[in-house]
Length: 121
Image 1 (cartoon, one colour):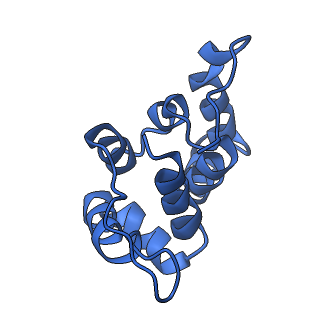
Image 2 (cartoon, helix red, strand yellow; image 1 turned 90 degrees about the vertical axis):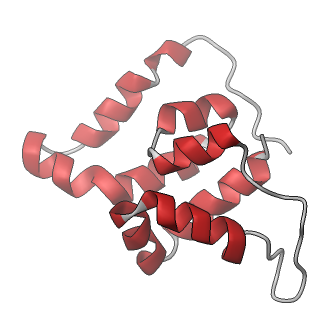
């Protein structure tokens, strides 16, 4: 896993309302676009050719599978905030405040007492 690359995706998409809307509407399209157009740029002038998602990472991103992302080592805060942005309003409307956060915590409860995967590169 390229922890850096997955975390870069989560950070950039969460911080851009247009990308976030695209990610919610069509995750496969946005992941493919980001991986080919946005992700390879290290900064405004430097591009890399060696970074990319593994099949597992790509599938987890497309499926919004935050449990798998967490287990692969994606930073928990970046993962939590992007999925709150995607799901909090509809969950709150359906089952009350913090309902998405409670589901997130419940789905990761099997990690209680275990060492968190390293977020180091």
